[in-house]
Image (cartoon, rainbow over all chains, first blue to last red; front, side):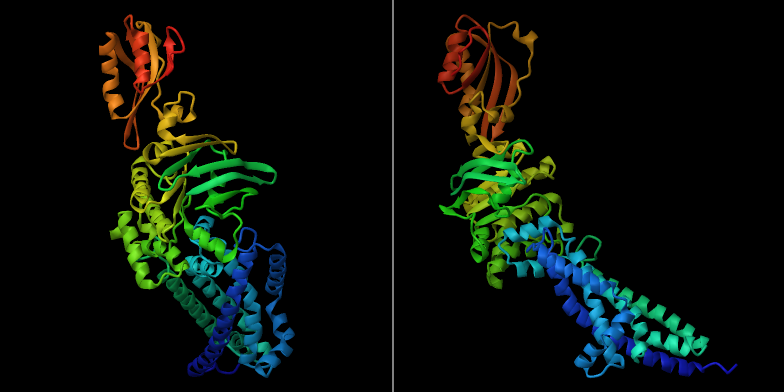
Length: 227
Length: 332
């Protein structure tokens, strides 16, 4: 039995892996939000009872979205290799992981966003219609603004989910905390690294979740919010 | 100002509106009443341009607005201010922000927008609530903000769909006062859809009764209450309870409707005096339609010239609705 890894090395490992995780998750969350929110808006607009109901478009969009969501991430990770190479010029490393992460998260965000937007009460939307607002104006000032707290929470949920997905990044050499726990901790029987990573992940996800909950509350003007 | 012509609308073969024709004069308030399922909501949604009628026309200032699309439709929507049924304010916006919404849609620049919002807050008496969020307002205050929002873009027509349905009687008064002020101070034409006859009593000049998708009665409230067979009179006037014991001691018993200060105050004593009859009020009561006092009394008369007295009351402007005892047909 070899001696345990010194704590200073554990911390160095953790810092490096955390940087990789935050990089992969951060960039893919931004991309997934920028592209996923419009998907969610489009889903809601074309839904029955939406502002631009269109059954055909909605069905196709729903099908693609659900297909994307049902794809196991590890499959997406390897299946998208050629696409990744095309976009980022390589197929290994942290940057390469961003592509499948973002692609996997877009339908996830889209469906979350649609569910949230559908919660905006029909009376409120119709009241806005009667003011002569355009569809774009209603989407911005009513649908999105009214559900902003829930949307911020949804992005938080996405970040946590993506941290989970990113644990598989090691498959294509992306590194990160999940990779650290599996490769250094589990496969090399290094309990100290394994459990340090687990504890650190727990702290990290809790802090992130808390941050998003706070941010959501800061944007909420309803009764429970401090105004 | 706004006319509805032969409007029809059905949903999956079930007809909701069956040729509705209405006319609201500029600067007046029309109340559309009727039992649930009569088509009131559908009519309101058609006028609010949220629902397209199957046939017929809705004209504002002579222009049919039912078949518009795109930006013309949005412009027409700004012509019609709508106070929707139920809570309709944006909960993430202040009262002032909610009122500003139609102005933003109309492209009114910021400084003018703020001035206009200030005027409207003043009109509905909520200047001190400008920065409050809907959750910090009472139901009545929220509804007044909804009225202010509906008026923001200077519409020529204001449509209120059940504006008092979720409110207690006291707050109902404050919302109705605001609707009345909108008509008086802005000259806006008001169409109010309601099941609450108090709304008609307090602010309506005209009334239309809807039943099974048809207008079965349409006219001036003060004219209709004098008509004994009108639905409006039976719904608006105080009930006359049957009291046969009381009535048996009179030669004549008749119901009479009196409209206005002069009639309510002076007509009956004068009739009693002129014809030398004993004239007692045995039932009924007094109500107010807008500012006008209106009474429906059950009268008991004793004396030889009782018939003549009733006839005179009819000629002097009282509507003698029915003679319950003695010769029939003394109706005015």
